[in-house]
Image (tube, helix red, strand yellow):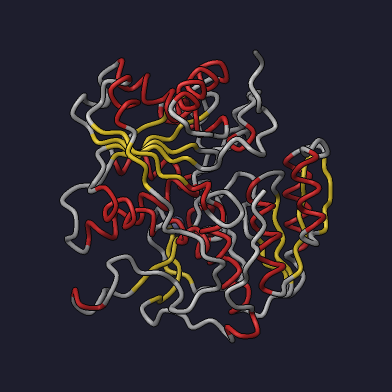
Length: 392
Ligand SMILES: [Zn+2]
């Protein structure tokens, strides 16, 4: 367990966050319709009228020349932070040899302050909450997003309410309680999301994660928090060919895609890496074969962090626009991959190990070339994973 032992600054010392003057609003991922930045967003009304449920993304004015700083625009110039990001990219030459691929690197997100990639999204979400003078962060999560939100809210002086499953693992529940979050238990996703939807009807509540059915994804500005992963990968190891991303509703996959798309638009890279959404049972895979985007795709899995029955436009766009796809890795395959990672000295939550299983599948059918440079997103280690240790 990694509690944030140092708080670099608090909400009081930060003052009101300063927005990036290039941020001009939100835009529909599908039709491009523009919308203002507000505290709450319900996706694109124009697309909804056509029966398509689509989330929004941050939209920026063009950069005034290359000298304007980073090639990846972010919503805020000053952001609340506990030191997330700049995680290591670990070369894994022995694993690369075993999987018959030229280069394999692990982007180790377990080094973030609360131990998962979620901190990147939470930091920007908390910044937006402070910007709009919200008093409470509210979200539906029974795992890493909940812990991240609880710790960041505490550090920022915000309250935090978490809608969880009744069978939330005890380790997570204890840590939420220790961070002062209020827990509300529900039997299913519909109950959790209805709770959040009810809360955000009141002023001062900011919903960090999805609460819509059909699902739209997390708060649009917050998802921008994942974009710097693209720049970090480029700086630390050069441009990857393929990126394997454990995926539930696709916030992380889309954020990485969007970061590389910004780099492409700025002329910093010549092509997009392919994004592969790794899922525990067929959801996006079925949509890519013609299934409805807004259908429910039920399945059981021990891959706690990527369970769920919904598919979003976000993840569909990330894989189709990058030339990647969806890869189903079942629990047995993920456990076998976790053994390989453990032998290489890497601790992984089961859905992150599934990324290695996905690479095995993609190499077998030559969808990833032997010459490829591959990055595996290690979303969290095994320390809090309720499926760890694996049965002998
Ligand atoms: Zn639209």
